[in-house]
Amino acid sequence: MPKVALITGVNGQDGSYLVELLLEKGYDVHGMVRRTSQFSRGRIEETRQRAQDQGRVFELHYGNLGDSSSLHRVLAACRPDEIYNLASQSHVGASFEEPEYATEVNGTAVLRLLECIRHIGLKTRFYQASSSELYGNVAEEPQTENTPFHPLSPYAVSKLYAYWIVRSYRETYGMHASNGILYNHESPRRGESFVTRKITYSLARIKAGHQRVLRLGNLGARRDWGYAKDFVQAMWLMLQQEKADDYVVATGELHSVREFIEHAAAIAGFSIAWEGAGVNERGLDRHTGQILIEVDPKFYRPADLDRVRGDATKARTQLGWRPTVTFDQLVALMMESDIDLARHEHHSR
Ligand code: GDR
Image (cartoon, rainbow, N blue to C red; front, side, top):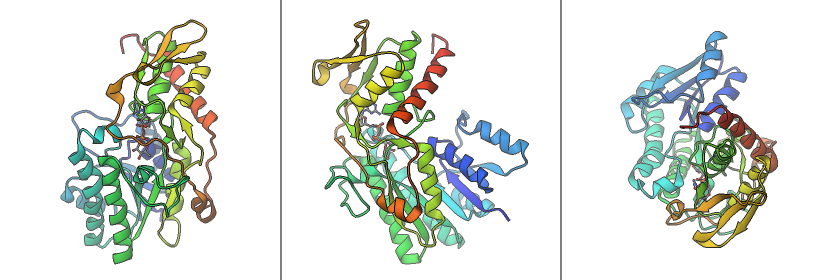
């Protein structure tokens, strides 16, 4: 009998890579999607078609993390051996504008899901998408599983609740429930409002003549950016361990937004020269003098992390996990994919 997995947030960046991984490993895969007036399944449609053609199980179920009865229905229908909870309000900046919503979806909903599992009496393994945002105003660098948390945004606080409720259910009820404390992970499938994809997509559009300038917020922010496809491998590995535990998943390298721009721009054929400071900082193309980057305070956050860098020694030694894609390779693969996308785009988009 194949193993059965359920993924919430299946149409997200990580969900789409995880489905592919689990199908490759022979799982029957179920995905939970929200009922919306418009279909948003762009990232998984091809995989769904392929699975169907090959007679494999990849089924979607309507469900909502805000509704216990729908969770019961979905869990009872597919009775998964493994659950990957990837659904969330994942935009840190947006959580300042809709803090209650972030708390509900990222925090309370995790409790709801765990309670459903318990009431049904499912013997399932549970993965929770935790985040490096928990470290916030970092107490040390690099951060490990033992570094104290100091969350700064409503997003981070909601994820901290989820982290602790998962631990609590593990310790209280003996559930096999693990937190993956994942650092930023990107890919060509990353949503366009996150900074890396915003940069590669906008530069590609500028190059293709569809856009004039790229406006960003905090250019000095530094992140530990990895490749999403590598990171979903770590999620799966966590659920294959005899004992549930919490793991940092990171590359251990730190790069600034400015650096990301410079690397991406070079691949697009630009050479960035910076001038000015603060809101007046601009990035120009050295060859043409064209202004490519401007700062727009609209993208500043009320509180932002200056730098977060993880130490994934535990994941490396206990899970045998390591990243396979370097920072340069990641930027290149995103930039090349977006150059291709922009080339086929109509001017009006
Ligand atoms: P982050 O990712 O908040 O780290 O959370 P994001 O790409 O949104 O921001 C990274 C840094 O870039 C700065 N920045 C901008 N960010 C956005 N989105 N748009 C801009 O125009 C811009 N200009 C500068 C930000 O201020 C920030 O410092 C991601 C998400 O995937 C979370 O869900 C996840 O938990 C963490 O990574 C780990």
